Length: 248
Image (cartoon, rainbow, N blue to C red; front, side, top):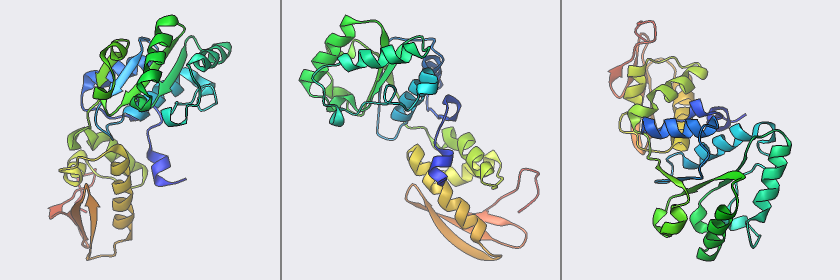
């Protein structure tokens, strides 16, 4: 299993949000406490799609990933209306799901005509919940947006990522304190995928370094210098201490 697959979010607790209120609302949806149609918008890489997918998989249970509980990509949608969603919801409910759920990723790629059809479909039934994502809120008209609970999902800051990054490193056998991880992540502004890719680079580089070696990995296009000495490790000139307080 690849590093990315091992550490990609699988459940709500794996997600990182800049705004705790946003995280709380998304958790409510995953727990079935909210069911109004949901529109997640914000910059690319902020975690909108994976949050929507985890809500869907949590609600769909054993049907998660099956043909009746997969996210819809407008580029591949070859139907003229949204009646297939009713069939998906019926199949979900036949398997014990209390309410049907559908995720539409990058909904703005639907033509204005299809957006109008989706709006009409929403007005015609209350059997399920539709969760849509977009990087381009301005491409959706106001009547369409009015059918949804709109939630801005911003990219987490380096500080927001600290606990998640620390857990990933620990799972790979690299035990650092939160303060040490903060040094590693200083200035990071990338996406979750970029963070995981960089942590993989760091983990492999760290494990491969012989004593007194120096290596450089990149975090958010910023070089990070790692120097392993007999009694300590320096990252960007900072001496790291392990979780027990012993100098590395």
